[in-house]
Structure formats: structure tokens, C-alpha cells
Image (cartoon, rainbow, N blue to C red; front, top):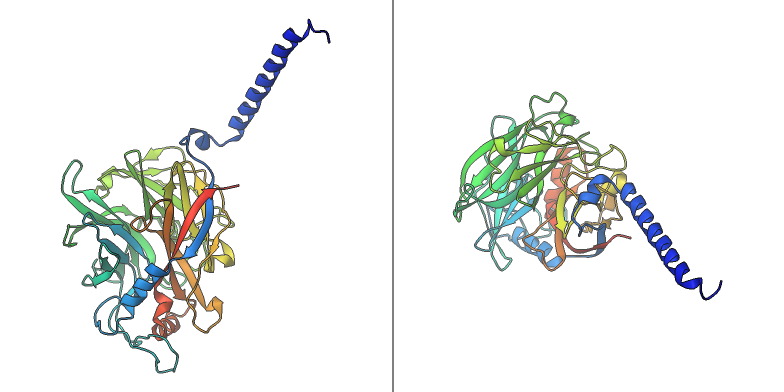
Length: 417
């Protein structure tokens, strides 16, 4: 090529490079799911980069629950949720809870664990108040939420502080509740009935009222009933309320995740709720799953969602046998999905009992916004004895009270590769 030809050849090559780059970009845009392209520009794949056991928070619940001088306070529970109150306190909410007194080791079998009597009272829900400094102070008279009817009970899930009414300066606590009804196997944990919202006054935390926002009794198949409130996320004027089905009540976790949304400050208004039907938001409660294929992908009936910059991250127990010990995650650019994953999980540390590891199980992972900060997330998971016979399970978690308490880990997220 002559020197005279080079000036015109260079621009042609530059144009070819630019055209090639544009073509590649177009291919990438076509390949990406529609919702991912329309998501926040800061949305990026996320996964757990590192984690460690949080002995401080785990130890605080052990300290409080092991206090042998208390005769009517919380000694163990599951369904762990929390919300920070305007004055800096943290309200902890639990589902099935043991009250009463515990005893110092050794127990009658000679094992070195703090223990409780097998006839110790259990209530369906409870609330414990933590000081601003992180010390558990007291148990509110339990159960905090009364049974709605004979053979039915309420389990509290996500909670948040809202204005009493839109635009009001007065704040209250809204607590989402799952109503269940007693049944027999495979529904040993009760049949789903409805989602309710309780309003608690501030600062005294008195239950003012409870309203039903989603009645599921008209859904004939209990496996298709959706209970909302396992977790909530705020975004652009909306509170996104996640929930799920129980699928087969004794399996792990092949349930389906669903999502509804409510304008900020209107959780207690059933008419303000909108449900994702797979294409758009509607008010007829005709919700459609946003995650779950019944096999490798799915959620437990209780899971948690956080927003890390522009990315939504969902934590749940892993599918299959790993679901007894392993927390995994999914990510999405939108609460309605598509959800990508599951990603590599973390193996939840379980309490030492001198028994085989498979005798205990982890479940109900929950992120606690009241405890995290600066890119660090604090996640709890509940621990229970693995036994299909309730009486046997209760006997084991009574001889060793640490087998029925939340445990905590601190974790950080990073870009997925």
C-alpha cells in the first residue's frame, strides 16, 4: 500500500471497528432478558463474597435466653424478624416461642446444656425488645397477637415503621402476620389461611388493630395458597412485599416466590395492594410466581430479599438435601425478576450437641437491616431438631435450649463472576 492510500484506508478501518462494536452491543441487548435491560443502570450480578459467624448477636440471645432468674421471658423461638424503632430500639418478632424458666446444666440426663422442663409453655408468637446498645431487655407479654379463631394462630413476619396515615407525622409499627389453621400431615405446620397486618402504637408497642389484606381460603388447594410478608423492600415510592407458597409442606425448598406492592405508608389498606400476575400489576390477588421451578430452583416458605445498590438479592435455603444446612442466593434487577441463580451458598454453622450433624437443621434465613451497615449484612437463620414427631423434637430442644434459637452471620456481597 502506498503512502498516498493510507489516509483514506484508516478511516475505513475505524468505521469497520465502530460498526462491529455496535453490532456486538446489539447482540448483547437482544440476548439480555427484557427486565434486565430496563433495570437500574447500577444493577449487576451479586453473590456472597465473604461471611463469618456473628458471635456477638448470637451470644446476646444465648445470654438472654440462658438467664435462669427469668421466669416468664423468651428462652427460644423461630421465625426471627426485626425492625428498628424511631427511638433506636430494635423490636424482635418470633413465631412459636418457649417461655418460662431454664435451668443450669447438667440436665437430668447428665448432659452439659442449659435445659428447660418438657412441660414449659409454648406460645404461637412473641416480641422481645433490644436497647439501642444491642442488649435484650424484656419480653412483651405473650402471645402479642391473639389467635383469630379456635384452631388458628398468627405468626408474625416482616415489620416496618410507617406513618399512621399517608402524610401523617405520627408513626406506628406495621407487622405482617401469617394466619394458619391446624391440620394433619403433611400439613404439620398448619394450612395457610390469610395474610394480615397489625398496627402497633409507638413508643409503647400496644396492638391497636389487625386487618386482613389477603384471604386465601377460597383457594381450594393449600399448596397454591400464597402468604405474603416474609420480607419487604422499598423502591421508588413502593413497598414490595414478598411471599410464597408452601408447596409440599414437608419438603425443602421447592416453593414458589410471589410479590405484591403497596404505596409507602399503606400496608394496612387491603385496597392499596397490587399483585404481579406475570405481565402487570393488578388488584385482584391473581398473583403469579416470580421464582421457582419445583426442582432445582425455588425458595423456602420463608426467605429474605435485600437491595444492594441497583440489584435485588434473595437469600433462601438451598434446594434438595443441602436445604437443611446451606443458604444460597439469587439476584435480579427487578422484584418481578427474572431471578438468576442459585449461586454458591454458605454452610450455616449449627450448634454443637454431641449428636450427628444431620439431627439439626437450619431454616428461615432473614437479613436484619437494623444491624447491618457499610456494605455489611447481618443474616439470621433458625435452628431446630430434625424429627417428624413433634413430641420428640420438643424433648430434644428442651434438653438443650440452644437447639431452638436464631444464629447470626455477617456477610458481604460482591460482583458475581
